[in-house]
Length: 477
Ligand SMILES: [Zn+2]
Image (tube, rainbow, N blue to C red; front, side):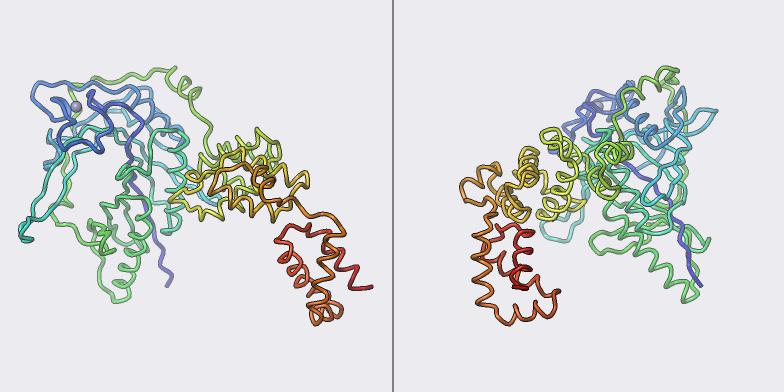
């Protein structure tokens, strides 16, 4: 029997680029502040206080909705989602809800990801983040306690809910990478900030009961939590044990999902329309105005790279996945117009050198700037240096930030293209590697060994093409 998984996601991310919270003027940047120093009568829910909606938050969440192919309505409302938990000073969370013919800020979208897969976006909603609980232990080591910090309470949070359209944890990872990339392009959320993105997932196998996984505090962890949960459910199926419809928490220390307390899993949120915020009429011009403000998104940029710069689909994808790398590429191309060569230097050499991964970007922290890569590409194009020499120079630029031409002048690395000099070196190698010369005469495939020796002796400064033709010539002499 082939088990088929169905996975749906509830993604939360903060609008970290805002300057104030969603319904008050408290600082949106609550990180690194003294606990409970960033709150006011509104976000701490004092009686008589009135919320004032942050207009930019509405615009940002609408931009996210448009980027995810959603319909943005011409009016929105806010609701009180009632639940009692210490992180919620008001005992309700202001959020959105689809009722009375009014929807949240985005509905019914879809997003393509990976190699032509599509995920349906059910809903995008704008809401406030609760406070933050911290757990600790007394000095004796026995007393557990929890602390509460309301600095985060009221920060703008966007929730994106998908249909159960994913069939593997890997699909989910690719999709979440795409979401991260879109958020970076829109400039609304810095996904690298601690707990700025969170994700819950629901999963069922073979149409069985649905299990929800909560508390996954980074996109990176979602794939791991899902892989664990699939393995757990498959083991239960093998042993003919029923899977319970339940909520489980991801424990990122023990790397397992654990059953949430039954009470926690029960929901009776009683959504009430928020009486202190009237229905917000966005109007007809709102969308066209936003569309005119929307930056170019990764898919459009990729198409432009392929069309304008004639670089491959694959290389374009790698470049646009990280906006800063794509910007770097375009800056270098503006300095010296050789897009293919520059893309090659960035993707093959620079990213390889720096062990570039999706999670970190040593590339952007290194001392290499677009002007370095532009000059390097130019020097290779004009045959001033070989590619191999260029690589050696690059490894030096990463450390020093010097211009390639300066490195060449200082180290005399300009290409040894003088035929006599290369010939002299070949003579030396032919004398010292007699057996290899005989091999190459019998089997031309072994010629690279001799080429390698010449390159080694000239510290890779000889032109490989000239060297190879000279070796071939000498072999038949
Ligand atoms: Zn406040």
